[in-house]
Length: 536
Ligand code: SF4
Image: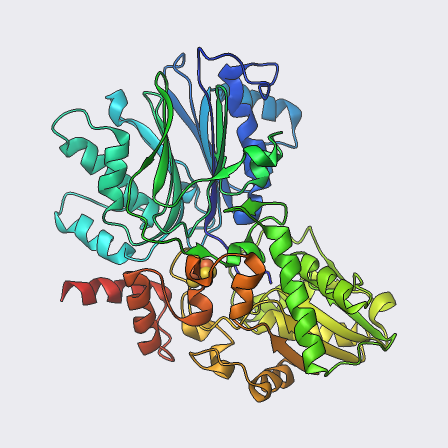
């Protein structure tokens, strides 16, 4: 469902000198390995389409670090559809190391200053660095108050990325002597509660790529000879030309530290009690061609489809051997689950909904605008659905608007005689405080029908079906997630479907969000309330 958005994606590449030449280099050689970064960002564009940017390192330039960042897609920001302009940009940004970012925005979507990486120039090379961040700190409000309490700091953007930037700057300034980057990270991360992956590049040529202590956010990397590359998703590394067997997931609480002379080492920067990988990565967010923490996104979605098929047989509410019964996925993320369900049930899976790929960038919109957008997003094909009993497979339902409009159009434009919605996910009953754009309970449709426990009953699912305009509707139970992904349930974050958060601040924020239900408090207020509560 296109209602959920990520905060961002991160990528990094480094060609060390004096260790030969990687076959991945283009004809311009290792000094211009940065040319590969926009391509990597394109592969993770699904994680953010509103802004993009990169910082490169080139010790032969006066500005050792150079950053280009702007609002727009990767293609727009790096002018990839204009050969001469793209070439000129790639030349000016050429470097043997680069970090990059794609951003989805919950605020400042048209403001270039929110685009990452954030570069902090300094006359001391040691303190000159650039930094990009994917995720969200649940204790953002607390960190903000602490930072501003000394009266010396000022926040111009009010994002957690800016807070981290200031924190790093403070640690560098206060260190009595030279401080290693891994120790900076250790100190900064000690105050974090949340989910993140980050990449940092210093003017001295050191790079850090890190993943949060619970591994909520993904981070994949590859190291072959002189070349190192990392990205939020493995697909970016696969498409560079690496074998899938070479691509690894960075362990939670660990950082890859690259030194221009000493090379690469992987160090732990924070205790990692047990992982809590975001299950939504496999269900919806990640590119279907990615593998995260050794679990294939495609195969996970396929198994969700098998779970749907099994449940369908058990329910027996739809005639499965009637030639009028067809399965239609809501494109694109539900396709693998729909295909697998259809295969298991020996029912045709048909492309009855065509997604308008050129609808443009997605901004957060409320009310009518959201409705209008939902109406233009998919075109139902009458040729496929007329007179049919449609089992509509959807990966999740967040708010009701998109589904409402979609069902109306499937009936009116597509001519379907029945619609049976099957959701390859449990009901989303709780907000995410780890970087996914849903942070108040009132925004969600499921708590209104399944309460805060998400208990699935036939009558509550039928009530939702009636209100949405479907003939029947059913979700998968919470237990199906771990089975489909193939990881133990206790190694997954499933907070938005269970209300059980893997961090203290997440749990605390949830309690505040529960107390705020019906009060029209926005999510920003929830974070401020946490800061106030923790100060008492
Ligand atoms: S709350 Fe949900 S969306 Fe957020 S990190 Fe956890 S599983 Fe992912």
